[in-house]
Structures are given as C-alpha cells and as structure tokens.
Length: 265
Ligand code: PEP
Image 1 (cartoon, rainbow, N blue to C red):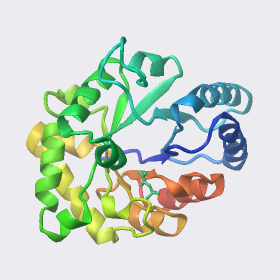
Image 2 (image 1 turned 90 degrees about the vertical axis):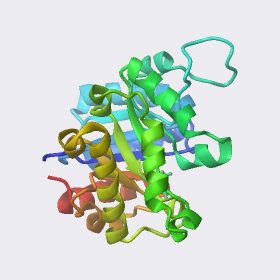
Image 3 (image 1 turned 180 degrees about the horizontal axis):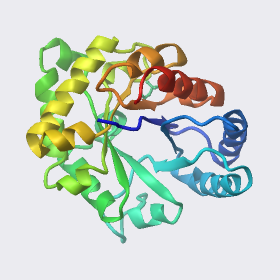
C-alpha cells in the first residue's frame, strides 16, 4: 500500500509571528527547487497561524514552492460561546488550517486531557473537515510494566469512539512514546516498528485491514536528521511528528530529506 509520508513540525509554544516569518523564509529558500515525495506540515502556535497562512499564500503564488500544509496544535470541542481561551474549528479554517494535533502527551499530562475529551475534539475537527493528527503513546512506567499494548489499545479505541471509517481515512495517527518526547532518547527502530505494527493491527480490528493499511502512522519522539532515515525505513512508519528538531529550518529539512530518501514509498 502506497502511503505518502507526512512530516509535521510541532512548534509547541515557540515562534511568534516574526520568528515564524524568519523560519519560513529560510525554509522556503532551502526547499526551493526540491521536490520531496511527502507532505510537509507546520503547526505553529495559534497566534502565528495568520502569518504562516499569509506567507505561504504569497510564496506559492510567487515561487511555486513545495506545498506546505498548516496545522493547529489544538482545537475546542465546541462551536462558539463562553469558552475563554479556546479556539474553534471554524476559526481555524479561516487561516487555511488543514490539520489539527489532538491528544498530544503534553496536553494529556499537563492539562489532564482524557481519551473521551480528545475523542470529542476529533469528532468536532472532522465536522469542519480538519484532519486530526491523533497522538498516542505510553509512558516509560507503562512500558516497563508491560502495559504498552493495553495502553495503546485503550487510547485508540476510546479516542476514536464513534469516528466513522470515512473520517478515520482522513486521520493521521502519531505514535509518540512519552519517554522519547523532548528527551533526546529515541525509540529504537525495532521498538518503533513493533509499536506501529501493533497500532495498525488495532485499527484493523476496529476498521478492517484495508482501512488500516491506508492509515498513515507517524513516529514522534526525538526525531533528528541522524535517526530519521532508519526510522522511516520501517515498513509501518509513515513520517514523523517533530518537536525540537523542527525549530530550525535546516534540521527540519534534513529530517525530511533523509526520511524521504530511506523511507516512504
Ligand atoms: C513532539 O512534541 O511531538 C515531539 C516529538 O517532540 P521532540 O521531537 O522534541 O521529541
């Protein structure tokens, strides 16, 4: 099955509008003339979405640059109203947002997001035709206690409750072992491949083998230029969700280049 790899930069709470502009100008100039067989996504903070959308619109018109998709890092499960601090899916659409990261381990751990809450947001995102980047992953304690598979199965089953197959096909899953996020410790390619194969098997249980074979599953957790190729060469790894190493245009580009050279179909 041909699955187009997807490399997404999760900037977290980094880069306001002016830093977004600096990054994008540099990134586009490095990207100029290169055509990678993958999707490239950038998820800036909410306040930088407008700047990113404006720059990409101008850049694609002027330079015919590689299409870059915009992601948000979160969304509300509600449409509008008295929800201080929240941003709705329709507001995101106004900034040409196509993807939304949901269920990131930082939101689960720091803001107490539950599988049910994440599920409500996935359903709301699909109502607005946003594509969820649905993050799952185990803590080190859970892995060491032999709970890897049960944790992943629960996150997937509860996070995707009532999500129909047609919406699942528009969803990207990001397997991110919590112990590898921002720590510099990466899962070995064997650990990552085993977890990805398991995730795909759970999706097959829920949606059937054909759908499971079409879903893209990204790996996330200290992906760097020097480990991207080995990870992306694994048969069930279809790209990466990248935090720290995507803050610099050069390292983000090298991850994409190395990943596309050795992985992807
Ligand atoms: C992330 O935040 O999703 C992530 C994978 O971060 P890092 O690449 O810094 O580990």
